[in-house]
Amino acid sequence: MSINMPSFLQGVNYLSPLRYAIRNLAPYSLHAIHFTCNDAQRLPNGSCPIENGEQVLDLYKLNTDALKNLLALGACTLIYRLFAYALLKAMRMHWGTVGWSGRMRKVLGGGRWARVRMILQSHGINKVHMGGFFAISGFSGWE
Image (cartoon, rainbow, N blue to C red; front, side):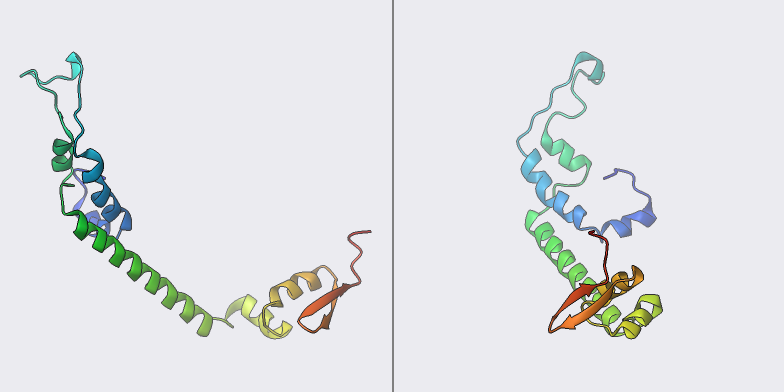
């Protein structure tokens, strides 16, 4: 949070779920708080620079409607989740066989155990399929 944020970063701030979470919680936590200061911190007129939580909320422009911020937080979270789901779905459908790991998946037969098979074979371990499981033969690491 900054009072004087550069203008090009202010737009990015609207994409952050943290912004809406802080704007939602700040009025509840600062509403009835009173601050004190010592003599060295007092202004020339004798008052403290910030005397209560309402002044803090006004200073940081956090004195807003909590329901709006809660709805914005929910919308932001939902949009990020949908974006992540779409990205993962696209990677699985389109880019699943691209690159070194995709080629190895094709060579080793793909499936759930492809990476396990690849690691075992790189250590000289042969495998024997037995239904959905596999037995390790030729491994002498536990002797």
